[in-house]
Image (cartoon, rainbow, N blue to C red; front, side, top):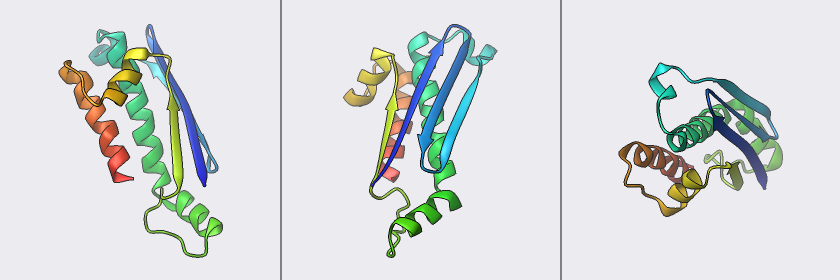
Length: 123
């Protein structure tokens, strides 16, 4: 079993995330541009979490995880995240509940939920 965990936060003018797995740490941080700076804090929180999850999963789908799976099992699965638990933590109640509810009346939040659900289904 492989565990991947991460934390993300978006507050004020900035954002950041850290995801840790057996392949190492992946950190992202920065300040919001004009395109997202005026968005609601709930949107920025879920956007930051979604971007971090997508970036990390994309990086795992290459040789790092492939070699890890091969080392853990002689019969490496073609599904590179098979047997993997991915935990992402946020301090934003709206972002968390929107994901678990699976929907939002806000179209922009709903789009982010769909992106996260697609990641969940693809893996």
